[in-house]
Amino acid sequence: QVRLVESGGGLVPPGGSLTLSCAASGFTFSVYAMSWYRQAPGKERELVAGITNNSGGKNYADSVKGRFTISRDNAKNTVYLQMNSLKPEDTAVYYCATKIWGSSSWGQGTQVTVSS
Picture: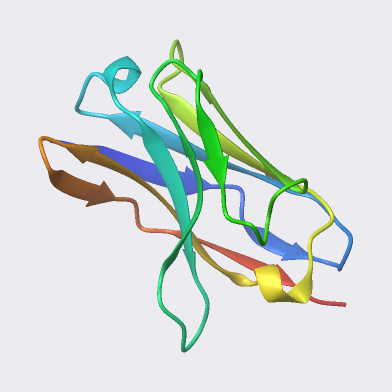
């Protein structure tokens, strides 16, 4: 059974930093690409960043390029999202996700609030 558990969210002032973690279990983590999504109130869920199984490829939404970094540790079955220079518009629930045999799996999400 696929399980994804996000952590690391919180309240941070504009310009601050946070690192989100997503602990995975129930599947062979090192085989699958992983992604981070976010959903702000009243908006659709959007892709923030993705990483291939061996970290050889990464992609980012234009809105976070140069500020966010996705990484993974296959020995720890964990994917990270380092977020710097945070803006109020980054406020959202952040989810990690993967797709196995065409079926998407999601964590429960972690709230990130950027406010002074």
